[in-house]
Image (cartoon, helix red, strand yellow):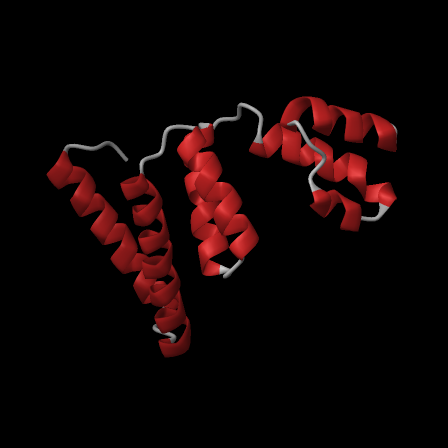
Length: 131
């Protein structure tokens, strides 16, 4: 797709050409737009509501105010509640904090993997879930 074609497609699909694309070298605009249009805005295996909740969580952890705003608004557009947006951010903070602790404390990885396997088996059995 030619550069003008990508911009026209953005305009038709989004009602605007996001200004962030002005900062991308011209030779990458087609591929960046194609990926964004297919993965972020398209129908994929993960419903858009959940993709955007993941997006707001990742943006919050990376402290990106642009992504936090965009993904929170798109999550709401796709039906996420304020409570779900808040929970996604809280969960991201929890996972990030534990990741920091585990990385710094460096427990034995083989032992940790064994512990995870035991926990998952127990939860599956106690909750009637299949592995």
